[in-house]
Image (cartoon, rainbow, N blue to C red; front, side, top):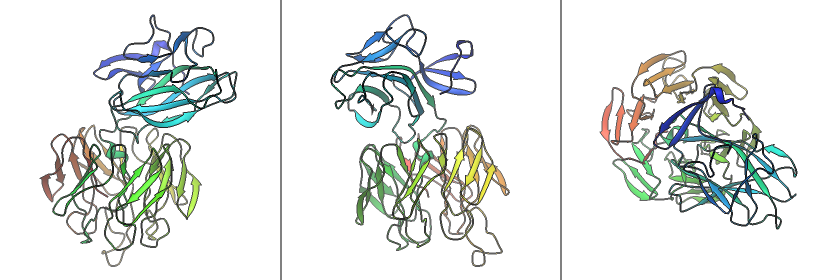
Length: 422
């Protein structure tokens, strides 16, 4: 875990608490519990103590030693990664991490443990798959040894620059009627609504689910599907329900064997493990990476790939490594040009590309640069007019605007909706 010196902290008051910038890393929380009072501002406690018995920071930590005891963070906007230190006095002692969007209804996310009798760094935990803004809650786990004592210190939550959760969403396809075009569509997490412009509306899923649409039966039509991180459930409407994955995984559906059907797959955001159901598992990437599967060599098979915002690295397993982009960019790989003279003579091949929300820059490696969109927009590249190539587009959540460069502008959706471009 990155250590910080007080002289490097720049505190900026914002609506959702305090942001701190340390050596280029922006933190929503960087709490060592060394303040003059406990709990710190906007934190909530239940049955915990401010302790000086042991500490990772100079003198103080939080003691959790009774069933149901908990400490809850302030409301966090756009959290990216959680890191903290913990000390356990028993062989079987665990911290349970819950999250909530309202501070009342709590959802289990994962558990932490470590070696007894020493301070340890807990596994860094990716938070980008969770709804935001949210609260995080550390709880004494109900299955701990009786009397187990746990201390928590140095809680850090870094900020993501993504303006919309759909920016971290992987979908295999977006053609919901099989006409070869990307359809304008949204998913509303609060109600489970799927709305496809010109086709219809249906309810499938609930708050906390992630859209995972793709052509799962190979009929050329995109199927409505969700992945539920809390249980690992994959539900494909009218086709199947299976359990594959856990709370630390994000969905990465794709055609990983070239049979024309979408495969169920997850990427573990903590350890970089790709698990593709009935096909393969592979370690490729780490907690700072965004999964970017795609067919980068034109062989009809989706390749495992990651984009590392901290360095701009694109690594496509077995194919290439390239640096393109920066920490403020959203990866938008896609088929932006033909590798040959026409659609008929050249294969589809995904290209490395980024969208930079701060300026609206679209940059497609080796091809073009264009400005379209802004800081509040989500990129929605897709084949909207039938050329077979991706067109640049944005979704503006505040107004429901879909703007496809050179093609159309329509209003479809509202605040809180996730655009479902492929």
